[in-house]
Image (cartoon, rainbow, N blue to C red; front, side, top):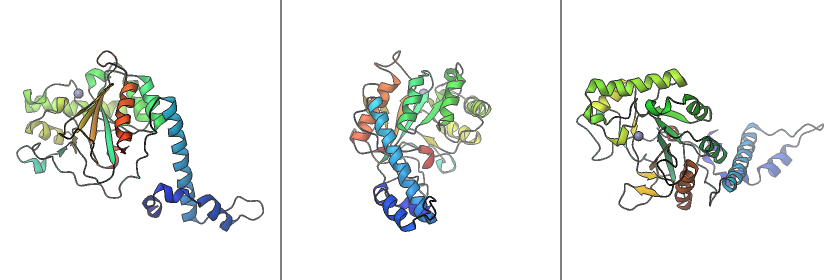
Length: 289
Ligand SMILES: [Zn+2]
């Protein structure tokens, strides 16, 4: 599998069917047998082609200006996470790292979707059709009206992570109250969806030392913030150069026409126009953390 993963899709896709199959030729009308490495390459190439064809058709259907780029296979070794300069608290080395960009040289970015107010079925279909991975950070007071929507999301391969019970401004709360907000949401997600999150994002991106201590005590391993934000009609940037960088985390929200000048599917078109237009693929955050 290492060889397969190390090869680029282009190199794999050329000639595997003709060369390998002819060489291995099956006798007695059986399908030709390939040696295991060649078979693995062949299947990988078929998957790459099928994925691209599906993604191109989906891009047309959902009105994207360009076909989203496929993310490379997950890295064999996960990057070492470090807290971003200026984002640390006292004694941070013992606490979950806080970052806005994942250290990688690959042209990948990560999409994260917060809160849970809007529950647009078209968004689920669109992301599955386009095969764009994303990670959700959920607040219980918003998702409790329809836990089933997020179950469908999980069934489609999206990780459900912690964004507190009630979306309070954490630095105003005592350690105990912060712990209730974070551990409480861990319990809700575990009970409803069977898995205790490892990622936590504080509401508004605001936290103090108690927030990170509480998060750690609730089982949180990392605190991803964001480098840019996607809306239905525009992007907003944290960095002065107003650009994407390898490993950047993009924030957006489960919101619709009540808050935005557009829908969640408009938001996906806006974000992907920027991401694909600048030569980036969206990768799974969990593959890198
Ligand atoms: Zn939020």
